[in-house]
Amino acid sequence: MPELAHIVIVDSDLQARGLLSSYLQSNGFQATAVSNGKALDRLLENGGVDLIVIDPMLPAENGLAICKRLRAEDRVPVIILTAKRGELDRVHGLEFAEDYVGKPFSPRELLARIKNVLSRWDQAAKRVPNKPVRYRFARWTLDTISRTLIDPSGHRRPLAGSEYRLLQALASRANRVLSRDELMELTKGRESVAFDRSIDVQISRLRRILGEDARAPAIIKTIYGEGYVIGVRVETE
Image (cartoon, rainbow, N blue to C red):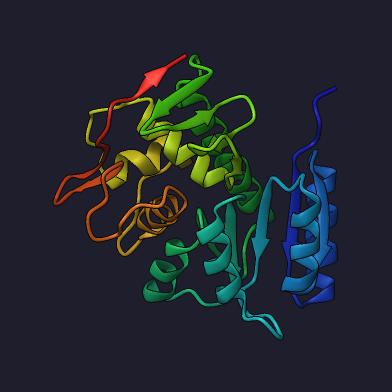
């Protein structure tokens, strides 16, 4: 049997956590409910989390701060679940999450949105070409089997899921300029929204890993007004 998708609910309301967890379990998901960011981090360290449903109104570390951190790492899709329903709140929410649901909400609607987000992420993973085993460029090697980056001295550098998908998307389309919207679609299965700079953040992180000069990068180039491109020769195995 296929493994059940694991949904983590982060909410300070004990009753809400219990009800939502039971509902998701009754609809074919594995569900774990926690009350704060520290408990969430422990689950993420162990791996196996497929999607997070989070209420930003949390004690200690604010839920929105958690969402920003998760978006920067971009390991797991997030759905924000909140009582704030204003347009501005929704725009801010979509900067840091794949979807936004206002309270009170229909459990059936949330279930549909969870399935939709999981489907988009699955399709995004399938869109990135995976036939070449390795991409070589500027003495670096991207290994698609281990999903690691091998530096010029032969040391392997693990990549976050978002970093790997982004670098593979660029390397597999060498010499082609890819816009932020295209990169968002290729790596996450959705279009970008206004003020979403997650692609830019990940590009900056990749450049630091590659030892690039931020003022004059040679490997991942910025084409102003258009997007990003690998600016060196890419060979495949």
